[in-house]
Amino acid sequence: MGKYVSLNAVHDSAVQDPDRKCHPETRRNVLKQIRDWIDNPDGSESIFWLHGLAGAGKSAIAQTIARSYSRQKVAATFFFYKSDPSRNNGNRLFTTIAWQLALLIPAVKNHIINALNERSDLPMKDVETQFQELIVKPLQALTEASSQTQLSPLVVIIDGVDECVDEKLQQRFLKVIGNAVNDCNFPLRFLICSRPEANIEDAIDRFECPPLCLDLAKLDDENRGMRDIEKYIRAEFSRIASEQDLDPAWPGDERILKVVYKSSGHFVYASTVIKIIDDKHNSATTQLDIVLGLKPHGAKSPFAELDSLYMDILKRQRDWDFLNDVLSILIANHLSRATHCAILMNIPAKELCRKLRGIRSLLQLDPSIRSHQSFWDFLEDSSRSGQYHISKPTAEKRYFALLTVSIIRRVPIVLEQPDWCAYSIKLRMNYL
Image 1 (tube, rainbow, N blue to C red):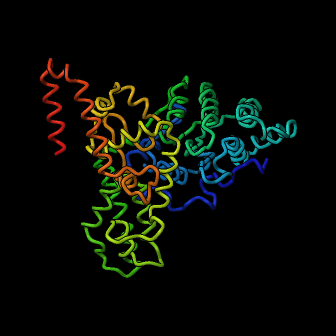
Image 2 (cartoon, rainbow, N blue to C red):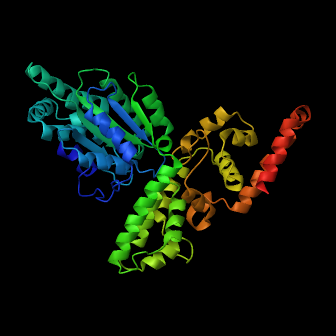
Image 3 (spheres, helix red, strand yellow):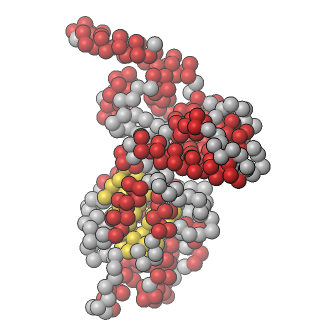
C-alpha cells in the first residue's frame, strides 16, 4: 500500500513548511474554539468545518492544531497542495489516513493487513471502497474483537480540500465522511479546512448531521485581524532587524502600518512580505521599498507566489465578462453592499451572490463585498495580472456606463419615487 500513501501530505513531513503556524498571541479565538471541540469528544458535532478566504491562514491554524496535540488525540492528517501531485490527489486521502491509523493502533494495522491480503487492489479502488475496507471495517473489527475495547474518539485533520484538483472527487470523499459520522459509534471526528468554494459548501450542506462551522471572515472582525497581523509583522521585523544589524526600531511605525493596511487582515500577504524582506542576499530596507512600491522591482514580481494564487482562482471563473463588471464597480467606487452592486448589474441581489459563488475564495459576499487590498493591487497592476488587468480609468469608465444605464432604466421609477432620484444623486456625489 506504500506507493498509494502520500507521506508528504502528513503535517510533520519534511516538505511541510515549519514556519506555517500561528504566531504566538495571534488567532487565540479560533484556536480556542477548535481546541474546545477536540477536548470535548462527547460533543454532538463530529465534523468541524473551518473555512475562509484564500490566504486567511487556515493551513497555519490546522498546522498549529496538529502540532499541539499528540497522536492519541489527532490520529491522522492530510494537507492537500495543488502543485504537488502526491498531495493534490483525493484518491490518496483515505489510504494515507489508514496508514497513519495503522501506525497508531497495532490491532487496526493487523486488520488492514488482513484486508490487503484478501484484496491487494484496495488502494486502487474508488474512495468509497477504500474508506469502507481500510478504515471503517478495521475500526469495527477492533471494537468487535473485545467487548472491553473502547476506542476513544480520534481527530483527523484534512486541510485544503479545495487544493484537490478533482472537484467531483472533493464532493465524493466529503460525502463519504459525512455518511460515516452518522454512526454514533464511529470513533473518528474530522476537522476540515477549506476555502468556501461552492461545490464544497454544497457537499457539506447535504450532511445529515450538521457540522460545526466556523467562518474566519465572520469570526475575525477587521480590527482583530489587523491587530493579529500587526503583532506578527512587528515580531518578524524585529527579528530581521536583529539579524541584519539594523536599528531596533526599523522600519518605523509608518511603514509597519502600511504593510498592515495592505494585508487587509489576511496572513497570506503578510507572510509573503516577510519572505520577500527576509532575503539574505538583499538589503531588507531595499526589499521593503520594493514591496511598498517605492522602488521598481525586476522582471519578476516580488509577489509572484501571491499572483499565482490569484491567477489560479480567476482562471477557473466561467463568466469573466460578468465578473469584470463587478470588479470594475468595486475598483471604481468601492460599493460595499451587494444590493447596490446588484442594482447596477440589473439583477436581484440573491442572483448576484449566486453568480459570484465561484469566486468566494477572494470575495466576501455577506453582508458586504470585500477582498484583500492586495487583490485590488494585483488587478490594477498589468505586469502582475496580465489578461485580468483592470485599470482604475477603465473601471471608472465601465462603472459610469453601468450607472447611467441603471438610472435611465429606472426613470419611470424615479418619477414616481423621488427617493430614487435622491439616491442616484447621492451615489454620484459620493464618488466625486
